[in-house]
Length: 121
Image (cartoon, rainbow, N blue to C red):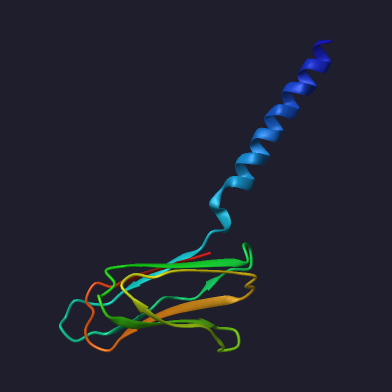
């Protein structure tokens, strides 16, 4: 009887450990960039992130100007632009069924200081 209880307890410990590992953001990747507040900067680009572990990406911004600016998300393995969108204010863009490495770029027609792009899988 004690042996059976020990096996059940061990199974519970292993199940808990596995669930913590599965829920951990070990495969999460993120990158960000900020348009400088120097009076003339209008552009920033994130480093590339791989979305292979999750097959999704999310881009959000803060400090988006109250005018249109351009968001580009590019597959760095083949150079194909997968998102080309004019944004007014802040962005909140999700894509699923994506399988490569991507970078995000923001571009304004006039200075847009402190526009920050957060890119993650």
